[in-house]
Picture (tube, rainbow, N blue to C red):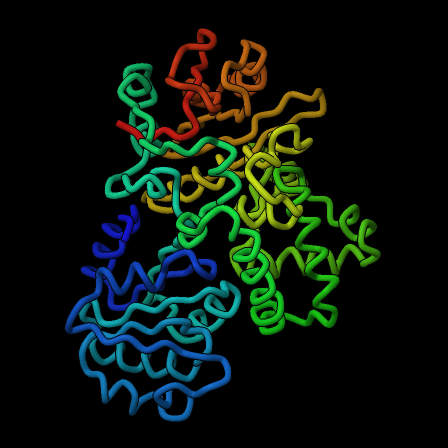
Length: 412
């Protein structure tokens, strides 16, 4: 098993809270992480939507009585009756480390927990492998944590790259799901085809009203093709002949099952922030490549939107690191009508950290124009030095106020 950066945070939460909920997409390693960290006396029950496992729905109090020690419940959203029983048990005994729950359907998990365990549970969102974890170096924090605490050239000079012999194309093609990083390359299309089919035919039908699974599958492919662009539900609806409300609902279904996430527009003006379009990303670049019928990493050479796939990989990696920082940094994107934009703005502890993403090993000074425009547009804000994340060999100064940073940086 490769070490996960979330392991230390998981154990710390268990030490101090009676209920810890681990959420994430299918196959990101939730169960594997828990089995590796929760040894005896922990018991584990895996629920099913069709079968009442161990009486979780029929007699949840008896299930808990038969397992008096700490209990881990996998796919907890399938038994809201059990969550109500856990609430009663926690109200009687609020000792920390009593229950760990997992869920791969964000909507159902949050709805069930909101009704049953409000104020009693804390959440840990588990993404797929970070670049550091894929290389087997995931025991400690990533580069983002060090950068947020000390955004200086000395910090950047202390960073090193991960020891992964695979090139950018292959890492994008494989994506972040653990199993996809161990299979032979020629079997990846079969893996993702099976993953997508299971997801559409099982999870989506349970999450919402999707009468046409084939059309929803095409919608997922369109979302993959539009990853790293501003979300335009009307355009997506026109492409497939569905209404904008249906497109928005289907995007919400993707987000509710952790297959899609959005980065809101940045503005200190609340009205502009609300009206600005978010930028959307498919959560896994391996799935995005498979949805666009790519057969090998070499397919990325000359691919018209490979820069968008690279941006998707970088933003997803930063987001996964941000999930493990407390308090969690806010992520934004910035664009003005003049055309100036910044791919990602990380906000943490009163400081803004602008980041541009370029799929170029030696970007020129013009790559930092958006960073300079952002700093100039916010003179009253505390803005850190800008970063241009790219497939370069080492961190180096690009302008007076911006440095390049290797996309596969491991940290100090």
